[in-house]
Length: 281
Image 1 (tube, rainbow, N blue to C red):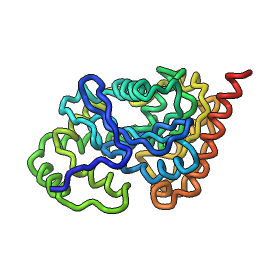
Image 2: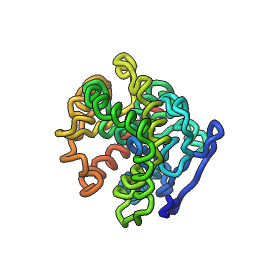
Image 3: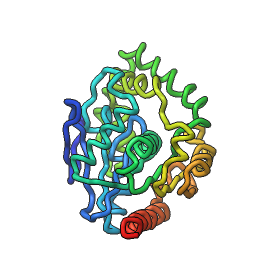
Image 4: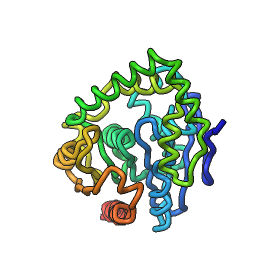
């Protein structure tokens, strides 16, 4: 049976009695913590992390609870969005980081944005890739509610499929491994994650967004109903210090990342320089 294996640079911490896995790439002083999308894991963002580390950044990839190599309890109450924010701030405490640039894709973007509204002093900047906000709500409901009901009420066939995927060998392409790992999750784990996330608000209010002062890079793309470009564009309009970067597709950052990682690297440089300038002003 194919089991998940930790990559070089793998570490863990314990939060609320659960072990959380994270990876560290690079050793620079400028810290970026980046998170995966729903049901995915750190593998999704490893090539990007390696590219940004090569520019002198320290990039930490966190597996949120229920994902990747982190623990996977089957109680839905463990997967509230505010608890994901707690996990992120616990990681910053564990790293001894007073501030970091936070970011992620989809779920990771929303957790980062929520953290900026609840604990703004810890946030030097934000990189929000494909945020999921109001315009996405109908598609999210139509996609994930039936999926949650299916894995809850048809656990035996879903478990058979997941078991077969767990036996598949992993590839040399980390983002594809992230998808295979998601398909390997046990039905009870998937049901708990989806239930926990869907029962509560997944993003901050409009007034909370307008109060976010951290410089923000929002990455969006067209032709995706789960991550509509309109959500990315509206978020830029609501944040005081945000700019929009259009990806050519949902896969650009994973298949042809050089343009976007260059833009993200430049943004990280600017975010840390701006923070230093404000501190000395």
